[in-house]
Length: 429
Image (tube, rainbow, N blue to C red; front, side):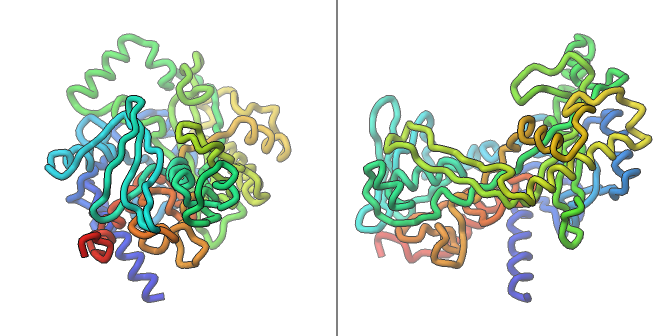
């Protein structure tokens, strides 16, 4: 137990090292890191009413989801400095490009890891119709994400032997779990029609309000242009939660669409979505060809576990109870999605199956573990091949409760520290 506590404290420090945040408890939050994090700079009356309604339902107010606990409701923080989003590229990669030993190659498609005599020695990629390669002086690091890291490993001869042989790929390491253990957060949206025009659906069609949005962003660095879709939300427990640990997360936004990338609805829509924090369903990623440009087969298997179906049905019921609380009920007149005709558990589940979707949090396809069946060892090294690591979200054995962005950056931070403290792979030794 003491060793586990020390490991948790060390992991917390890796989170703090990457963060630059101006508020919160110093025990949990970082001040000197590269990634800027700020509090919400936009106030929407409908969002504020929803947070109050969630408290009337029985959830506590939580001023910092990234602090001591995730339980409760409040405003989300964003990785924004003054006006622009702080991404991994802007916070970490762009400054590193000033170094003489960093070269960034774009518009390139990795075809495989070059492996000789059981050692990773380089990378091959395609660009402008030409094949290119680079040799490694120490280690090769693969950070292509949970969908493409297993694809590249399989194309390189590391993966389930039968799958590789079926596609004419020489088996270098028979690793059955490469591409397995795919996990993701699956969400269901609930959309209501507001009585007052407090939706971004209305504001973006008003030229005067659009001008004000632009001025608020330009002059004060605040307003709708400084936030993502989800502005408020939080975490709660369904009747299936264990030990009071939240098993669902809300993402609430003063707008509505049919799906990401489509036009906003013409009515005053307001969306409250919910996803399951700890799904039991597992999917897979597998190549369909030895052609690196052929997309892999992605089988997420959402809701394949009965537990997941029960949790999501209960989650939708909780959303409805929150929407019916006094502070919010008078603000809307009709439920548009899934609609008031969806009442029974079977109907709710059917609506979730047909109307739900990914939160874009895939993890786990190159599982890290201490057991020999795991794809990676505890230091993120690929089993069966020397001098090769995978450092990205695919290394997670199980999905994190909430958003995967910060945990993935933490894996990068810790993975880099592991490499710095391990010199036994140097070729010139």
